[in-house]
Image (cartoon, rainbow, N blue to C red; front, top):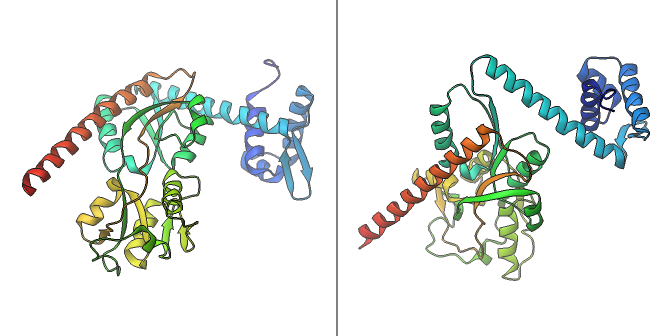
Length: 319
């Protein structure tokens, strides 16, 4: 198999698994459709199994095809990463690093850590992908990123990923400055049940936290909501639509300080677990990954100390 299975076979399988169309795959790879058909037949003959079911609407991977496509996807990603590393080193750089991060880390942790990393290795090529934790874990499992700054969302993920916690997040419920509830001194969570909400995807830890909080007061799923994974969209919609949302403090405190957002005085039943460094188990980490992990640890400790100092100043001023 090592002598017969070629890079073009794997590349074709990766594209076929993603687009599920012979014609679309041929267009993307800039070859003829018969050429795609022949490459697929070569692999199926080589493995002795059928990899795709054909239909009038396209193609669908068989169970065996799913496994082969996943292998092809990971291998193609590794080859692309290797090619980028070689090009970077030829130019005198320090290789590359693909990072995934949740938005809660973006106001302070990751930007500071990247500043430190680039000061030490200015020619390192860095690719940054922002998404929810569950999306980043999928990307990490598919090896399209080298490491993630995220949280584990399910207990069984501990068997698949190594996790090093870094920072806690305080969740704030907030609204636009002109919202009718903006001037209240205290709000019961039940009062917000029929309000229009901006929510993240159902699998996101924050969405699940909100659902559990309402379930604790015997209320089912929120009835009036818009769903988005975009933090920018969430902030803009809350500012201008009369809707409410819940996000980590680090994301919304700037808007609150600018007085175009208002934190609503309502208590949630739960807090998010800490987020931190996530890597694939039993996978050798590159020098760049290890270096960035070290920088993240140091930056997180600096932020914790700054928060403690800030809290002490507030207490002193109150006294």
